[in-house]
Amino acid sequence: MRLEEIEREISVVEEPQLDILYYPKMAKKTLNESETLNVLSLFSGCGGMDLGFEGGFSVLKNSINEILTPHFIDKDLKNGFILLKKTKFKTVFANDILQDARNAWINYFSKRGHKAEDFYKESIVDLVKMYRNGINVFPEDIDVVTGGFPCQDFSLAGKRNGFNSHKNHKGELVNDKTASVETRGQLYMWMKEVIEITQPKIFIAENVKGLVNLDNVKEIIQNDFSNGNGYIVLDPKILHSADFGVPQSRERVIFIGIKKSALNKKVLAELEKEIISELYNPYPIPTHSFTLKGGQLKPFVQLKNLLLDLEEPDSTKDLSQRFYSKAKFMGKHCQGQREIKLESISPTIRSEHHGNIEFRRLSKENGGKIENELNKGFKERRLTVRECALIQSFPPDYDFVIENKNGRKGSFLVSPSQAYKIIGNAVPPLLAYNLAKRIEDVWDLYFKKI
Image 1 (cartoon, rainbow, N blue to C red):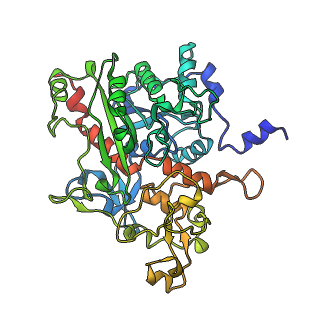
Image 2 (image 1 turned 90 degrees about the horizontal axis):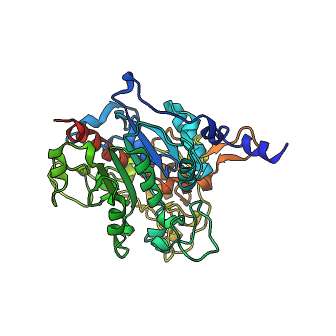
Image 3 (image 1 turned 180 degrees about the vertical axis):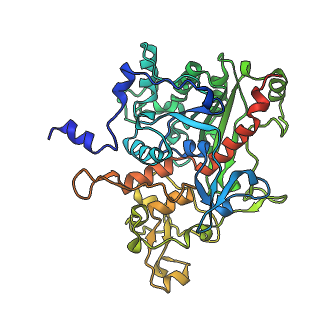
């Protein structure tokens, strides 16, 4: 069997990229779809933002504030979960350079009515260059563009190279030491070009909290996004996931841009004010009390509410729960060597190697505190892939470890190692859902002509 045939077998489906060249996809809405808001998703990963924007997935019931957001809830499910209502948003284009992210995305989103060809694996740079060469890469009638442009270069956990990254748009190290517009730290400029091409009413760009503390990066990016393209870019806001029912310490900075010509004049005037009133503010209001207290906020979600009913890896049929990092305990002075606190939230789920995955429990010898489990003979281990996914607020039916049934025995379409990576890279779907529902709430206020 030739190499290209082998590679084709181990993909979830055959790559659709050649279809772009001759059969451009057009997403023009029909009359029946006029209520649908089309989303073009960049740097999509395994679809945390996409899933959040579409809704219709299950989350822990404690993660939803029944007083502040009763309209989020569709119905109760078993095991303490509820189903979220669907939104008006639909992902019509997704993109990421990671094959494992694509495989996971297609495997899950195909069950939600999406097609494999909705996902493109070229880099954003290559996609824009194809458009410049006359190829209709991007669908028409795009209402929203989302994108979590690469964050490693701005992360507190990384080297914080920022704009001076020496990795290219495909994530590869480059020999040329001069950072350019095609290096990873400046890929948001290509996102800006996609926005200018597709002309959405709203775009949302997200990144790590560390970006706002890195020199004047926040102001540069905000100005670049708004410079000369007809968009008002609001001051970015840091959202803490635990304030929105996600049991994790994860902060993301969100940039929201809105097309001026689409807004009615009254709303534009409101959005240009230094302090935007609650009525017109597109950022979601916290639902849980982690960094904030009081009011009708619900208590933050404790890990024990989420994890205690899970089977142990050696007694489950769920591949994503069966696999976990076997990296040994290296001492508490190292990153990722802590035991989670069941009465609290999780540390940030990171997209790093196995030695940085937190411990579900430590042995008594290594300082383990979960004595009721240790006394039952449960062994020391790190968090499983499934546990990390649940902490990120992915639903229990999203498979992350996926066997390659057409390949050699023991091979994967998404391996446990890669599953950890794409989960750690993702936006928590529940955080994205709160953002999407808020934007859905203000949509008619913004764009209905008076």
